[in-house]
Image (cartoon, rainbow over all chains, first blue to last red):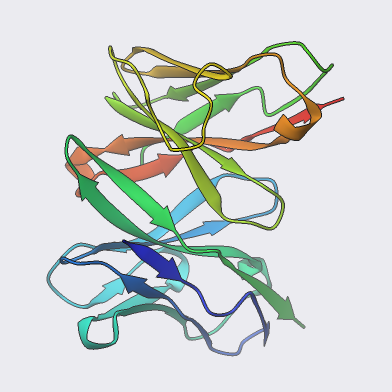
Length: 115
Length: 117
């Protein structure tokens, strides 16, 4: 069965420091991978997605993610974190099935940014 | 990018009443919409997939008679929580898929906070 694991429940980073959020997936075929961000009390915003091609994907707000098939990983990175990046981050894998498509979300990683 | 709205953003109701939540795609047509439920500090749980003009597909364990979904047009899906009880209190989020963005990329609404007293 398809699954997504985000090993870190929460991470604290100093403003200006680099960030890496981990994501591992389990999927039988080539996965469609997503990273979403959720601010408190809000819906989810798509940061970036990977379908095929270049394994390093650029997203919005200065984020990037790298797909590593050998490690079944799709880690999210940002070189310099801003206080406004504090939020919940969800990794997700798209799972096709007969007649449709379904997205499976990881448990999320909450990012805290300290001054 | 594609914009999805939800209404209301917050609703408080008495136990036993029904509540309707609307999900609209504002600048695109969505043949497929999804309804999720999110408990505090937890991930999103898919409740059902809503296809325009047909019956919704519910996930295992979701009561279809309690959570009525209607997708009557290409821009509107509604979720009605019938005979709501305090345990139905949650954050409900809808999304709409945009196939032309590749692999059914989903765009999410801002969510509806339901509190049942």
